[in-house]
Image (cartoon, rainbow, N blue to C red):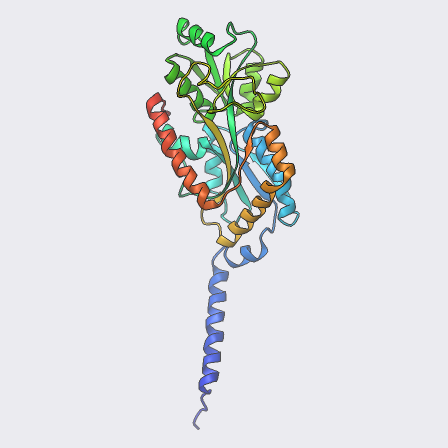
Length: 338
């Protein structure tokens, strides 16, 4: 008996159904492609912060996290502090996290621009291991001292450091952090010798500065400003090219006698490389709404920071420029970490 074949139109319909079934099967076989895109977010979002609680990176992550959850369907946002090694421990953990959008990383100028040239070997690749979402803030650093130190101005500090080489100590949130390199740049331009004391975050360094265990600190404005306003610390200068609206009477370092000095910190959110494009788009859209909120902008400004929102492409291009800039600073300062 001869079998009856389907018509041409019927064969086309069968072929279409077969291809659709095959495509669905292939998507289902690839982790994080079909299911994750459709269901995202399906569980709490974790933001890994590579420094201890209480510092600027942590402050900004918590501020953004509080508003990001509602923009992602009411999901909880958890802050996971992974301090140590100048941010490298947290960055490594984020780079190895599942690329499904449920783990984000609050990167800094240190983890994604400075460390690449400062450390001889990194446990992660700042470019290949991460998908940039957006910067969230640009922050000036502030040169602050304990009131007990025998100088009240930058010129007096330089004179003291030159008269006592290696005696003056400056703390930082860790090797490779922006405050650390801000101090190294100061040493290079002012031609002074100071001893660097690295900590696992801004909070423990600030604690020792307040206790008089270290002499000075180039700290991010948000974590240093409250202590300056309370009178517990003395502000000598700010590190950008222009003065801060929060401390208009405090000079820039260039104004205070260190010509050519300019340094700022920045902070931005990343997802692990390989995160599906639809998930990245959802995250970026939510972050754009958060950063456009007048409430969030006001809170960031109150910390002495400037809110920033940009496209992933703009953020990636900015990061390339920053990497080149800080590589020159590291090279000229002679700083290096094994």
